[in-house]
Length: 270
Image (cartoon, rainbow, N blue to C red; front, side):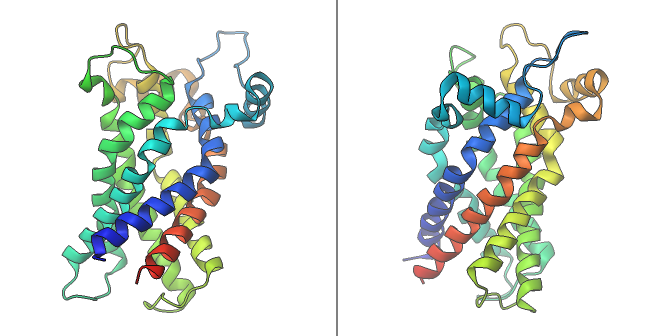
């Protein structure tokens, strides 16, 4: 089996593990991000992540936490396969000779390149999740509403994630040979790498969510910059970090599961 096929397979398995562990957290994150700003004297629909969980379970049962999983479940193979495969091909491109060890800066570049590729998959998938249903919104073009903030999230986010992941693995291994790391070390590295992703780009994700749930015919925001400015003006810095708690709570275990599953599958494939 070639390297591309191995990365495709391992990326698919890693993505499935990430989705199963992380989807309930992601559902709550989207609910908190996309809730309307309360009028003066009124309370927000959800007071926080715990309240959002309680209201969702009370209204829809535990299944409500997995609502909207159809779209990401259908595309998780393509998304994670693309992420790890493009990253693998970027690694091969940057190697001075086959088997050479890349620097951390080169791993950052590989992550950024992978981020560009997956943006075109993440944007339509997350648009469907944010709205639950996709109606007549400009045809194919409507599927890519929010592509700019999605790319602004995926490129630096994946650059940070893969850079931190490789740096932590080398730190824990005491050198560039990380082949002997155990499951715990891989999970720790993957979990903290996922946290680095959101620390780097969370406000961009908030902008992406409000752009994607904005009305197509009568938009509230003229674009990403306008959304950023208006959120900052009306809600302050807190408005750009709505749902940050559940996003971080999701990111650590979900990415720990993803990287562990990827590494174990990749190793088993030789």
